[in-house]
Image (cartoon, rainbow, N blue to C red; front, side):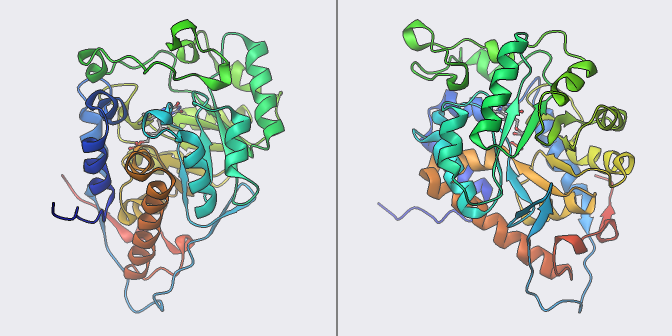
Length: 357
Ligand SMILES: Cc1cc2nc3c(=O)[nH]c(=O)nc-3n(C[C@H](O)[C@H](O)[C@H](O)COP(=O)(O)O)c2cc1C
């Protein structure tokens, strides 16, 4: 047997994960809504941002650290919330949390995790910029309030309210595969393993949510509150008016609305309207140091990764996630140096030329 080739980029990990996971599980992670064209658009929009580097300006040694919401991150990157990580690896969210903490970046725990928020906080530990908690407001506001209080008590450092999911997007791959979540997987935060081990999709069934619900939540937590799933600048303005402490620009990895715009294209207009009042984060399609630079050039404070750490998790658990984070760290340092930037704060829109596709 020839030795397997080394995995040197996110795409290598994705291919290896595809070979290791059950096809329907890989499709669950990889898939998007509708005709899935948003995945290509996401990449095409990033690639249209050509980089125009500066020369003879740095020693080549970059400090990647950033300050976001009062915490120091080792680089401008965080783990975006993804549900059901134990389908990628038996240690799921616990391995993800350990890897994020070890690499000095926050992890956003999905409300739909296979371990409880308390367990994830234990796995993340005391070091690193912290565990954040992602929330879908539930019709049962008593339950919603209780889970927010649990996240606070567990030591979560921020709350991420996902606002782009009034209904669940249609993923044709899952329908074609007749995909059902594996037996035994539980929505641990809901303490709701139904008999036989199957799982209800209660967490996603959102009804009648409006801006007043953001105010409702704002009044019930002292944690920094970020709204995730914002694309329209007017929604960003509304979010600030309702007390948000950060905007998370995201199209949910293309998994909600088919034909949705690329998140990267939404960054600059949102940044303009936010005008420095709160940090703007973004996720969607980030695979390389160049992509992180493009998002920073648009004015984002940091980027999130959804699928890439899942591929790392599938390939080698905690070590695989750390490899993904390490390769992006090294890539970003190299890209910044090649652009004449000493740190992420040096990146500006002047480094980018938008070209026709
Ligand atoms: C398998 C999977 C599950 C996800 N689950 C959640 C979730 O529970 N809550 C949420 O706010 N976003 C969820 N997302 C969206 C991610 O947080 C993120 O916005 C998206 O994956 C970013 O795009 P990328 O995968 O290209 O990095 C999920 C994405 C994937 C791929």
